[in-house]
Length: 308
Image (cartoon, rainbow, N blue to C red; front, side, top):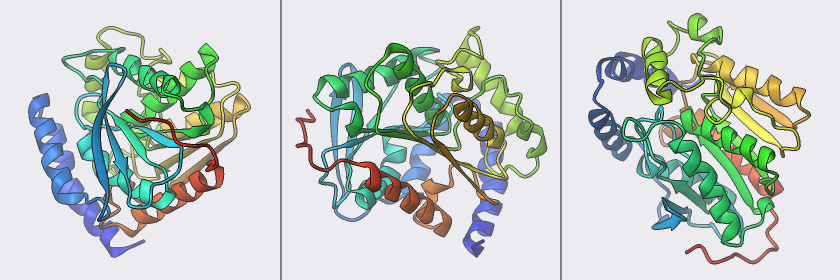
């Protein structure tokens, strides 16, 4: 493991985990995340960003310098359904776009506390349907996300299966939140090893977003969804994060239902470490592996539709 990983873990433990545990005002959480994203995360030189709409959902299109293929990565940002945005994640997706040659689309789905469950899910599914209506085939769409956004991507995948919509080419998630019961053993076993997320706050955030809803509802907890007929799914998690079992259990669930699934468990890395691709060699390598999988699967012969 890199020296940078050790330094980053120590920094996150001392500052970010304590900050997230202390702050309760969503506006302050969002401002802090946006500011840190501008400092920490840099897109490749020559990347292009464009605002647009998918139906009623505002989105940001991110084109890496070499993005010229006719597919799209539909990516849902993380942030516990409370913070995060297309701006905080645009650098990572522009990097994936550059590596894979595929442009990315990042919806700014509605978040709590202004919009409670199932607002984010409704926007996520609407975004996918809007891409289909815009002329994309299912096999031209790569579905992805991280943390809560990774759970959202998988919840949308379950809905795609449930409604019989065209399947995406593939789906992926970094450190996804898949079980809002918070019953995974890693919530306890990794309490001291987790460097970013405050375990004591996770259950409270989940309950506030659910607003009395069922924590096993597959629209928010994809671990309890039905994925029969889904295309391949790729999952990433770290041995040291409290959401480790969210990935392990999700992978087992998918396999039980006959889905092709690959899970990559990395050692000692922080929650959603690929976001730190600018400074963390392990983050860069994970994005390279994802991009390689995308390149293998993408059909580059179909002409690109109008993205407006």
